[in-house]
Amino acid sequence: NAGVTQTPKFRILKIGQSMTLQCTQDMNHNYMYWYRQDPGMGLKLIYYSVGAGITDKGEVPNGYNVSRSTTEDFPLRLELAAPSQTSVYFCASTPPQGQENTEAFFGQGTRLTVV
Amino acid sequence: RKEVEQDPGPFNVPEGATVAFNCTYSNSASQSFFWYRQDCRKEPKLLMSVYSSGNEDGRFTAQLNRASQYISLLIRDSKLSDSATYLCVVNTGFQKLVFGTGTRLLVSP
Image 1 (cartoon, each protein chain N blue to C red):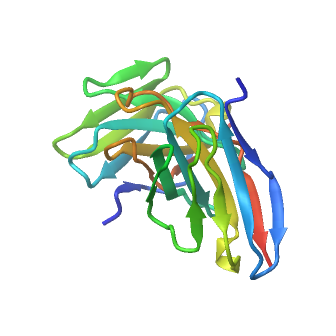
Image 2: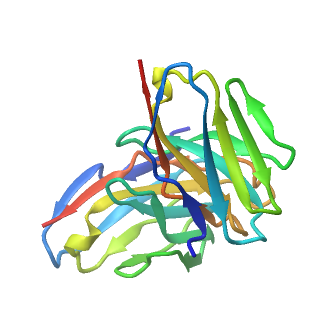
């Protein structure tokens, strides 16, 4: 099992450019999440998904879009990059509901800089 | 009020010390609770789940107080390798995981 895989690991974007952060998991987890972490801060939930075809907003969804067409993949889209979106982005997944005390598995993160 | 709140620290302690972190949560319907550890520029990793009856894993003890809506983490006999950021995580329902801002711990020789 590869676990949760994020790509790319690093990216520099110019203001106004768009990009997609990829996240895939091979553990057949229903739940997937996108977080951002600013320097010295905790993780803030951007979007999450409870299964294929279902997504929901987290605390800081503005400027982002997601889709969940398959169980494995949960890409995060930035349409018009802004300097405020400079951050480290983490994707995570958890097993189905009913196993609440099991852990969330994280990808290694994507470090995004918008200049 | 934030859903999950932690003292950001840093907590500076000598090796061998005992240190405790608290975390409060606002949603009384929250279902499960965790402590994660995050090393600099790395992804968070599960340290331990927090059970209603309290639980211990070696030098680490976690407690949950549902009435007061807080959880705690106690680290005994601190090691240099315990230096990290400790994140409180709350499942507020339907597997929505909300993270606190983290508490930074620095253990010095």
